Amino acid sequence: QHLKNAFETLYEARERFYPVDNYLIDLTLTADTTLGTSLRKELAGDVALNVLMTGALVDRLAEREPESLAALRHAIDRRIACVVGGEYDERESTLLPIETVLDEFRRGTAAFLRHLELEPKVYGRRKQGLSPLVPQILARSGFEGALSFTLDDGAFPTPDQCKTRWEGFSN
Image (cartoon, rainbow, N blue to C red; front, side, top):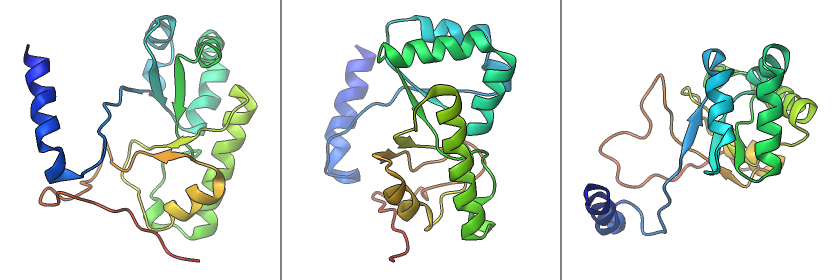
């Protein structure tokens, strides 16, 4: 009943925040400490999940936890898991030159291709670092969606905003 009430409240407030369809996203966060048994347990179920990870973490997964890598591949093949990511490492991209930001995306893509034989189609990052450079990079790199919020380090968007449009530089 509480979950139903929460959903109805969100549905009624939809027009105030953004008049589009709303989706609930189940996002599985990963870190060096979650690459073993806990990740394999998540991936063994039948509930669809989105796994947020960097290219560097995929490299470490392949090196340290080959069983978890195999479980992730199997979950992707079963269409249970979707990988969310893009960059090799979550650096301070708002402070870096465009060449360095592009290199992070190239290295990230290479790591995902090397170990999972796929490129992420949804961009996401845990740390703050969303800059006006990113929308153009994502559009030109074949991404189909992006999570434009941060989970660590920083505030985005500001709490007094009810609508946000993430705009980038034009070419």
